[in-house]
Length: 412
Image (cartoon, rainbow, N blue to C red; front, side, top):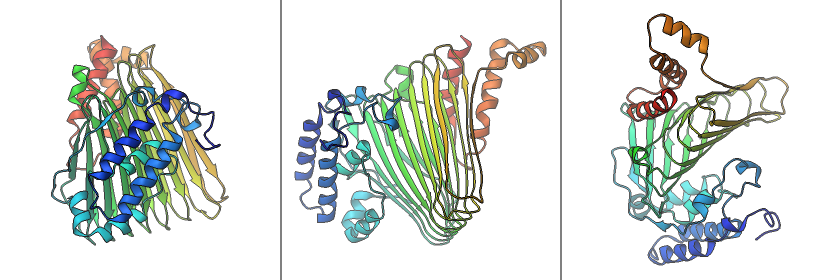
């Protein structure tokens, strides 16, 4: 273990490192015909993962999220290729068809650095899709990628590449159907000049109702070129432990992003959302709104970072994280951040934590509405600002079920 990480990782986080190294060796031996660049990428990733281990709560980025429930078990890889979907080629077929094109594409992916879960995804890279939208195409219906969650004792490492060429428009929905195991998603996104992409990450599971919800980790990065527009919608209604990291680079002038999220907590669920927006150049805009609704003994974490670099004049950035706590045992840790190194900018950020306004509940009751229905109406009104912004053609039935679970717990 390097000096940087020595003394910072609890033994429980390193107990299974040998298991994952052995599993990766077996995985690699079954794919001896893969191109050398892919073999090298996987090998470098497992070496680095074995060095740093799973993240510890001693690390600032993981201060409120204890991954011991994931790290303590020797999870078995759930293999198998992703199905072909209209508008999305499976990674395995893309690698077989044009390995050099995939090599060039992965060379542009941000380095996994010291992100343990992203490194694990690299180490077992095989399963997933490459969505490539051609120049000036306007894809009407959403491209829907559905990932069935891992079973108990299993881990799944899906990878999604999304490339939207100049002038093109598309909506991509990634639906993670959580299972009792670990689903560890990595998504790499490129939005070219004058292009537009709506990316919906839907984390929902029928298994929650049966007490089978497990672990979901996602690491997404997006690069937005000149006058491009990237809009993300992260909707979390399932999972015992959920961690989402989203990094956006506004790389050329006129780039624009909107990050929206809604996370619903019930029972003892933990949901952690981390985001970072990098204003690298002048004349870019970013808007961020994440809302949490937490009941029972659930816990939410939000950490949003907006970086405005020294040359990024005329930046316009806002960030907001309002949260609604519905039970005495619910908890939210929120930390919106601005780092500004330019002087001609317009930036704001804030967070609120509160409960339902009982005066408003009383007002609705005075109009003949029952107390449970009144509370439900107010909770739905709080959530609708996020739901109403979903792109056309994206159903929110799963979110409605998640809201219903929170409502039932809050009004019982």
